[in-house]
Amino acid sequence: MTSAKKNSLPSNLIRQLFTFSKAQLSAFSGGLVDYLIMIMLTEFAGIHYTYSIVMSGIIGAYINFKVNKIWTFQSKEFAYSSSTKIQILKFAVVVLNSVMMKAAGTYLITSYLKTDYYISRLFTDGFVSFVFNYNLQKYWVFKKSQEPKTGNTPTLPPDSTN
Image 1 (tube, one colour):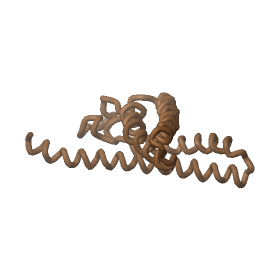
Image 2 (image 1 turned 180 degrees about the horizontal axis):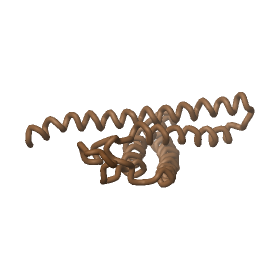
Image 3 (image 1 turned 45 degrees about the vertical axis):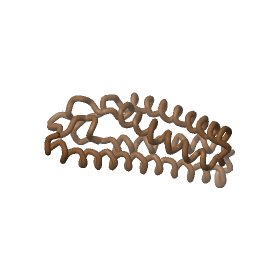
Image 4 (image 1 turned 90 degrees about the horizontal axis):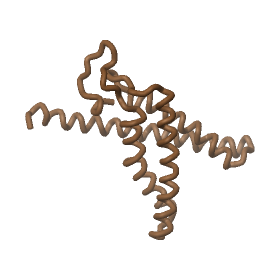
């Protein structure tokens, strides 16, 4: 391994960890907004909690999408490979599958390992977030174009920039 490759490995790892941290912060922000709006709609507007969950979940997902698009996965050198409409459709597919995996995983772990559902949910959420959500959002929903933005000279290939 050349010395240039050795020096770029730590900086690439740091960049990847920074992007991952931004994605988690974005997800947390969307989730917090979701939860607070659910409470406000239910407690102050008198809307049944099941409807509040749907409405607040859509708003939280929208916030997570926008933060990821504008901040988490944005690149100065490369444009996104899909239009915003296509990104929204892909994001919806990821979110719906994520919810199903979290529900199923929590149920299976709680039922078969006889653990408290709080613990099962935390384990399942962590697994789905790390393995499923982050990777699909980075490499599918917010995938970078192979061509640099007009007037920019890329410094790294699209798979390693954010």
